[in-house]
Length: 168
Length: 465
Image (cartoon, rainbow over all chains, first blue to last red; front, side, top):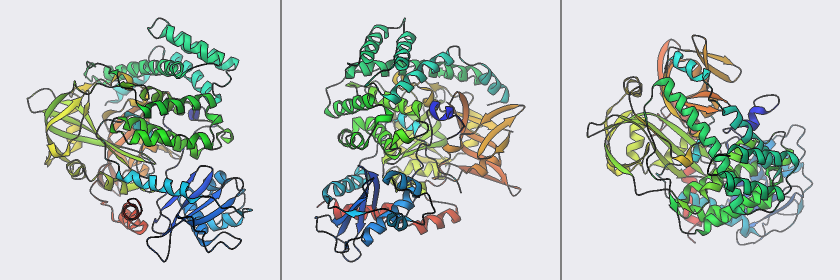
């Protein structure tokens, strides 16, 4: 917020409402998002290059699940979040910052939270199977952005979305 | 731009601007609560909107729409009328502000002559977008929830599949991502009411079955001298808009033009890596990175928008943007903005500022000379280029875009000449278009790995099964 009473915030057209995602290594966890009321994403298998795991934690209820994209349950789920879920949470914190992840999941992160796994440990989690298809298709849609053709017609609406982030 | 010109610009606030701003602010606050139940304050604000367009051809239609929205039973057409009225007011503000800028700096501008468009065929993606925008207006920003935001996926995906609807798709995608990140909106201390109402109104207009004219464009050949590049970005789009002076081959007067290239992306590709998404336009990237002129042949020109076709452009001799700005900016002829695009946020006028000092308080920068002050739009310095707040603070000369937001003029630097450790340095937004030239930044980027390559590998393996 730029001033005490928030007038500039309410009356300006161009504001950095959401800080841009921070760059992170994508090899292990190519896809993370806070959407559909969940922290959800895709974690590459460490052993099989063709296999990916779909992991999610629901906001509020903190119900978690992890399975392959073919709905085969993750073998690492033994009454507690598996290493894929921990990796997902870690990368989410790298990408969005701990405050945004905690706020979205409705976790009380009042004290110092060290990272995503730490945040996960603070939740009262429970296992609840959810279909992988929804998240996986969102991942495929995400990848499909890279296949879209460029556009060379003027896009005046982008003046509301300046590139930002020069802080070096 | 001289300090006396700036003084003239800042002193002459357009008559009626404050009134228009107040009417728009009332509408924006009404949209925060939504139109499911319109309270007294919101009803008064909507009535004021109808009052503001009294005496224009919009009045009867808007008055009817206001009555229906206030009564709680309204259609998509009623919302289009409200969005139209709000856009008309801000369009008038744009015209007044730009007129004062032109008068202050003596910029010549050709009026808009093309038609504003024609009714288009009924389009399913547009219909889906209108339905979503209607639901959003009913809910209000405070009522937006996960389900509503999941529902935007269908219109966005459908619009992305049609090149002619890219504007609508990119806008809805950007707005929805922002709303998603702000959930629950009810917990926000302040809602960015003006911004979201801007985006909602523009989306409503773009979702009408109406097409902008594409056939009545001229084509132009000549030498393009880039002045600087403005970089735009949200989670799933990267756009670069090059401002330049075009010297027509037929010897006509030099024109101020801009050319845009937009690529789709994902939010984990950001910073200098975004240039790699624009590699289908090597001539444009070379001209930016090497600061060269470009010879263009038969490119379509629509108002001031030069449609980029990389195959019809050739990289030419080195061309110093500061020299081009110094020599040509005062005489080059600008073009009017397309009527439906007029909005104060659309104002992005290239200017050359010289002989100033920069005052720094906290993270704010202000360009100062002779008692004149101009705030710097620090948030508009992109991570994709070498300009930083520190470099702007050390500068004494800059090519920038003059902008208007939050009731004041600002400058967005595109290139600066500065003195760092007693040595002159120069930096342009487009310097890294062909790769990062700063070894320190390159090292950090290399450490983060190649996001584009990783995702392309994943896409190759998973997408076509």
